[in-house]
Figure 1 (cartoon, rainbow, N blue to C red):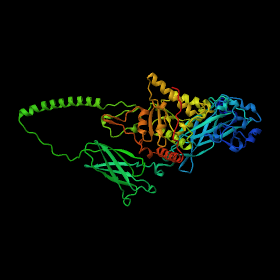
Figure 2: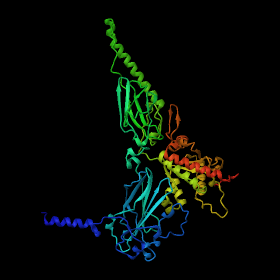
Figure 3: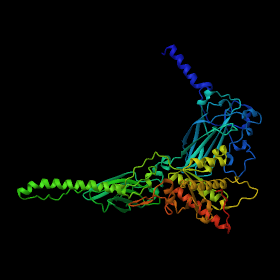
Length: 588
């Protein structure tokens, strides 16, 4: 039996933790109408609002790249009866949390989003809007939730957890950004939303490795040595994957050997043992094994070839007593000479092959064939270079898709933090397109102009010079190049690139000081420029894996970029080309 005082203290603690809503600490969306909220029905506390309940502002063009996920003005769903509700300011939500949900579709992921409201301005809080967008894509999903009009919130309600509805059909292993906004949206666009980037689960994380053919690799690898023979046993892929061929590759002693493996499924359907050939005794080998299919994941293991246990008989030395006495002295002198020569040789070798490379380059980009004296220590904590991409949308959606896929490839596979206007819609709405571009140009380490026919078009006489943001931005870059050249400053910040469906001769002379690249042929050169490393030096060759004209399309993001380029080429080949393009005037 508890003492009366302890019982009273426990009851008081429980009552404080439950708050004004009894035992309720979280809210999930209810199915109710906008009319129910306006009437102040107590059953309509936290309601999902569909597109049928809200009329979109006619001032928003139907061709807007942001679709219907532009923050809806408060007056359309709350301000008709009580316009004073739309005249207050509410701070951004806090503690955004992504929860992965179970779904039966193995090819897509599903999530729900939860958050806490801010205590600042919570008395005027009327709802939330949740926006989900895939980085590198234009698809946007949004959900709108409103609170009951008679609901009175206090700072104590800031501990409540609000949930979104289920977001479905999310691509696996894809980066998304979720934005939660507090309603009503203020007239001064500042600190009213909170966003969070995340990756959806990979196929093995969601379904298990045995159900993902694309991500499967041998997890069980056992190495055994019998005299000079080395045998490797590994587990085979599930039968439904229909993998009939495997391969193994080993590198050591400056040589690489390749072994093709064809298992006999009549003997064993789960495991297979094969022999490694042409291995040298006393050498350490780094080996890989994988299914012999396109873009297969490889399992890495180490093989140490020991000397055979059958040692030849040791010859006996016979000689005079004088030679026997001088033998230890001779051995000592020889050992001293060898040691001195080794130390001097290593110092000279270290000076010869030592190469300065920026530490933030991801380890996988370096060629595995480099000698042991060329080991590079990498610091992955250093931030990647920041890159702003400028382009023109006048060439149509096909060219915009190429720019989107290029930005996604650079960010995912070339260790670069990319800033693109299509990815930062809310920031552009706060600052304006021109203000956002100016700020990013100052903050970013590099600026890349994707030149196309749209940037060659003449401005009409009645069009203001700054109306087209792309043209104005490129004009600013031309002025910055001329100014930096006059002051003797570094010009490597600015780059110009074209794709094969554009002409390099169209690039104006004002951008002639910027570095030029033709993609996708110059992907390795672009990587070298962004990270400040040389592709070739005496004794050293930097191999950029899967970043070349022929190898980039092996990656999923590279294949998407290749497809977008082919579609743009088909579009431009059908359009009549202008015989003369007039460049953009720049102020030097």
